[in-house]
Length: 254
Ligand SMILES: Nc1ncnc2c1ncn2[C@@H]1O[C@H](COP(=O)(O)OP(=O)(O)OP(=O)(O)O)[C@@H](O)[C@H]1O
Ligand SMILES: CC(C)(CO)[C@@H](O)C(=O)NCCC(=O)O
Ligand SMILES: [K+]
Image 1 (cartoon, rainbow, N blue to C red):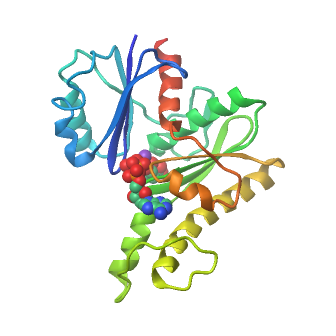
Image 2: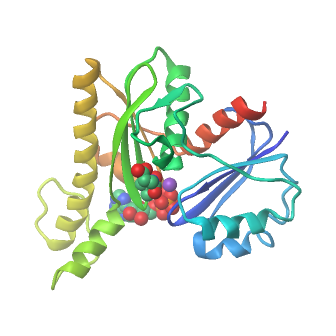
């Protein structure tokens, strides 16, 4: 049974084909496409793929994007399932006021994180960081309850907001420095410290709530750029959303 897993983000669609719907399933093919190029998938990257048995995805883009993705899947006789955040799934419970309003990418990444944590050792509190177009930082206690999380602008949005909201801040990308002494470095370091500082704060919140040092996982397209600048120990796991989709697929289909 093959599984095509989809992560339709704010900027890009990422996909991965596995030979079995479980964490550890063999990765047969994978790729990414900017949302404006979705129409090219069926005749491009997906034209050589064997028909998947199941398609499971998470999507944060709107209904129009969802329809465009579903059109590209029509070449196969398979109905995609889209994850909707719920009160509980795959060992995680959801503390959001309205569980279904939690972004499904956040929910799926947390499910991936929880299963990784339990695979690595005894249960512990866990912080989950996603660094993409937007940044999210989630807190999960050692019993697997999502306590809450924060949403902040991604690095790109922060810098564009400064460029458009000020008269003179149009400069090339700089370096992350402890004490920036030029505008480029000041802007790049500012965005980076904003994200790293938010993670540090959530890590502190969770540690005082649980009385134990949390583990921290980071994922998302820009995770590798943030990793060297984190002030809390943070493991970079590029596959967190796909791990979550595999875990959900395992519980639903296997
Ligand atoms: N130096 C940097 N440090 C941190 N983040 C950065 C940096 N430069 C760019 N970024 C962020 O990385 C994002 C690009 O990452 P990418 O598009 O790979 O994310 P993504 O996970 O695919 O996003 P989405 O899932 O929302 O589509 C940009 O939107 C920008 O906010
Ligand atoms: C916060 C983002 C944009 C992160 O991708 C996404 O998860 C989303 O649109 N969420 C819906 C709102 C919420 O999670 O509260
Ligand atoms: K995303």
